[in-house]
Length: 301
Ligand code: SF4
Image (cartoon, rainbow, N blue to C red):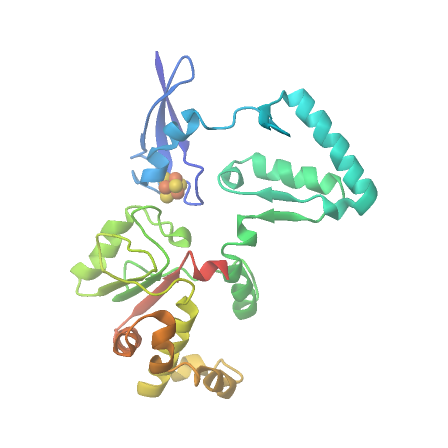
């Protein structure tokens, strides 16, 4: 007999609603998007649809592995926890509690109990060394939000449904929902920008195929140089928005910094023609409304 479970995908923060058919013996038979989910409305990406295969993958670790001189061998949970406890005690005795660190990655971070359990586990040693995917990904968003708005929890989300120009760095909506954008059916919503006469640009070192907009491939790890050049060209050719710059206390320092990032200077760094950099800058500045979203790459800084 097969039982249907309405649940959610834990592979990323979008938490898409899914329906999973599970046989009596625990075999995942089928995974599909949950059309009745109030937020994700029947969308789930390819990764989420494959979570049944991940679950049953023969290379998945289903028991602890002990490293030996001849490689890893399976251990029991009792042996593993006893061994780990002895080692943790020895490390704390020699180096103090902060020498014990925890790391919560996807999908544990999106498991309602696993994340808090590890945080509690680390806190019980008196250690403050707790890291997450956020320690290496998206920490820029939280830091800048605190600097700009006074709270790390305030995030500007691009108004995809109303913008005329959408510039996306390091994101492929066909394989995820755009990180913080968390859009159900992202291809359709980005496609709607073009249908109402707007433009969609992806900036990515990879040759992604988002099925919408245009992909501009730059050299890896050079996104911020492109952004600096775009700001330089916008200010030089159109001038910054006065209402926006009125809130900057030291605009001269910003301009002095940007002066070294003309399109011509940055072109060989990012691997794009200077004319294209100017075009990207001006189409952003000249659009009636424009929005930018950044994900992998810029978010790792
Ligand atoms: S976007 Fe994909 S990986 Fe992320 S929660 Fe949804 S189905 Fe899972």
